[in-house]
Amino acid sequence: MAIVYFSELEKGSKLPATEVGPISRREIVRYVAASGDFNQRYYDDDYAQDKRGVIVPAMLVMSYFTKMLSKWSSSSVLRTFSFNLSKFVRPEDSLILQGIVIEQHPQQSQVKVELWAENQNGEKVATAQAVIVLPMAPDKPISKKSQESGLYISAVPEKSNKPENVIAQKTEEIHQNITNILAEAAEVGNKLKEEISKKIDAVKEAAQKDDKKAIAEAAPKAKAAPAKETVKKDDKKAKAAVAPKAAQAKEVAKKDDKKAKAAVAPKAAPAKEAAKKDDKKAKAAVAPKAAPAKEAAKKDDKKAKAAVAPKAAPAKEAAKKDDKKAKAAVAPKAAPAKEAAKKDDKKAKAEAVSKAPAKAPATKAPAKKEQGKGKK
Image 1 (cartoon, rainbow, N blue to C red):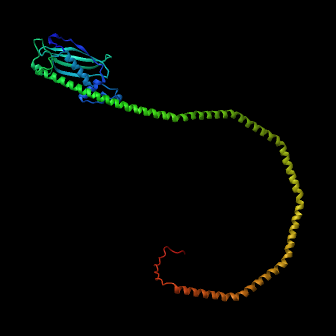
Image 2 (tube, one colour; image 1 turned 180 degrees about the vertical axis):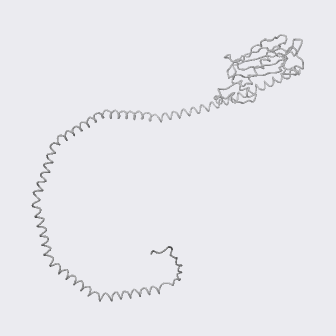
Image 3 (spheres, helix red, strand yellow; image 1 turned 90 degrees about the horizontal axis):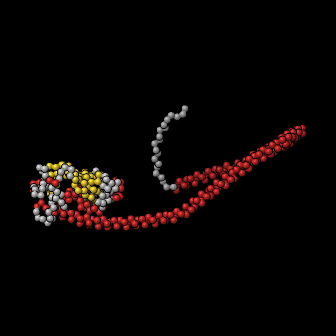
């Protein structure tokens, strides 16, 4: 560490450039564990995938400027400090930190410096401003009042018991504790990564096996599909080849049918006409003979009826007389039999009533009045 005196500076004086990086993921994880800021954007690629990837914490970038100032002037007081991050810094980026004196205040022995950081592509990613109190000269150190007005940075030995060195000693102790915590966090992170990697490999292995099974099951179907397609194509070709011949055959059949009809038509018409004439002749020849035959049949029918009628009338009259005689002979015997049957029926009913148990007298329901008017 060096000591810079106010008298050695002027407006426009440049601070020595400081190189940082490449910024490793290990350094990011150590910072996250020490600060307690466990934002997943700082270390989780899957989580940060939709947010354009993992980034370096802004406060870590700011700490690079404070380290730069402590190296530039170890015996000084940092009175004010402001910081702005204009572009995300990514893991594995390299930074170049630069600065320049923009103001001087001799009465307070303080300077104002402007700082900035550029990445490996020459892009400005962060800026800062600081007001620093410097010793005026080797024989004019910073007053105690000035030391108490800000953060005092000293270059004296770490184990000094002077009050002004307490901050530096505590800072070193904190830094060492942070280093230990970050180392432990890195080991835990590595173990987790190994376990996750093993699980991922197991899942990939299972997926590959399932994929092979699926391919093996799909292979026969894949072979059968082209065969079916080939059969369809052959069928289409066969139909396409047969279609023209079938059409021609139908056309020829139609023509032959027309020719046959045309050849038969002239002969069929005279044959029909001759058949009609022969039918008329047959009817004309039969008609004179049929009429006398019908007339003779009618006469014979009348003669038969006239011959039967005299004999039928006496027979019907005799049948009626015999019927009357039979009824007259049966009537005297039938009347006593009917009377006896009625008496037997009455006796049977009387006996049945005497044997039957007595019944409670039935209550008659009141007669309902007839509703509506009767028909006239």
